[in-house]
Image 1 (tube, helix red, strand yellow):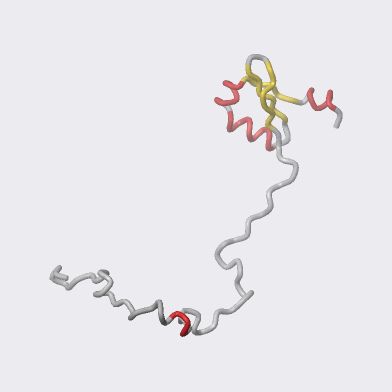
Image 2 (cartoon, one colour):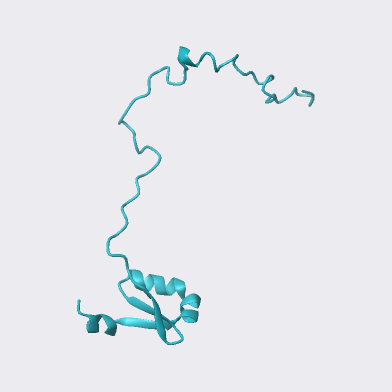
Length: 105
């Protein structure tokens, strides 16, 4: 695309106008228009669509479904962890007890 043709298709706005109309200007830039932003009559920025579209995002839930399986004991620690593990925490020893029906703990 030659430079004179590119300049002829640009929309020129002041920085203040761009700030007030940013949503509209971004939509127009996304649609292929080029927007020039000026301050004190000098070009300070250009808004235009990106050259390449962003890569599609993978779904997070179920993204790896069927790609691997967890063994039945996936949550059990091996003997190498024995020195770090004392006794299993119980709700009453960890301070997480909910108390009895009468409100006492």
